[in-house]
Image 1 (cartoon, protein in one colour):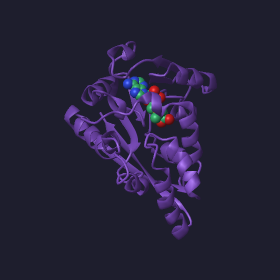
Image 2: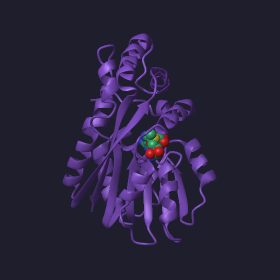
Image 3: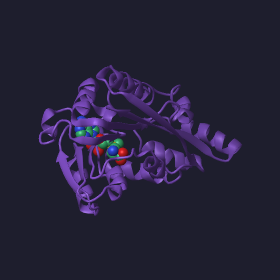
Image 4: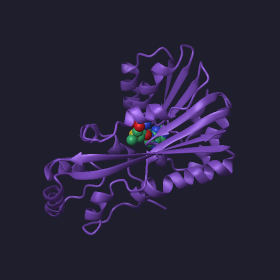
Length: 259
Ligand SMILES: C[S@@+](CC[C@H](N)C(=O)[O-])C[C@H]1O[C@@H](n2cnc3c(N)ncnc32)[C@H](O)[C@@H]1O
């Protein structure tokens, strides 16, 4: 079984800021791509975002929902939910639940068979029980409702993982997230009785103009291990000298399973 990275680590404010800064160097617009993937919904719609965090996606989709729609967000972090609540301005009503999507209690008050869309972006691989979560999502959706998972895809970070791997161990959890998680979602979805699957892939890149810019990003990521800066800097600098930039793949997979 893979070791799971701590969700506390991943949401620390400083690390998040550094990652957001790196995202501004991306070649493709993730939000615009996400919006294009949004499935057609009956209006008013009922939408659940699992692991909504500070509401990056909720804020994106909410303006497209008619008045009378309801958005529900579940997240472990009460702090993230406070920030989402403070910045929310759309007409659709918003219900936020500070809870664990692995616990039944988080779903109390959501009627089975009542949701048009259950969404999880960069969050569902933290579950301790993916089969139970897929079962629960299926139960909560209306017939014809969509379970939409957005996650990183194979090839992500390959350019620097091939530099890091000879220097130190890289957690098995990362391989799970990039390569195996989406396969499990597809297999469990089929077994649960979801009727159709719509995959879509975004091939994105973050382009670092210098070894220093990359090291700032790396030192704020879960991949960082002290003691190897010199070797990594030299390897990245070599690429920058040859190609003018250090480009890191950020492949994103959207999976939509229809009940
Ligand atoms: C990387 S963030 C993604 C946030 C948001 N979905 C986005 O795409 O910007 C992962 C989020 O999942 C939440 N999370 C992780 N495990 C969770 C769990 N078991 N129950 C509820 N939320 C969880 C974390 O608190 C964090 O806000």
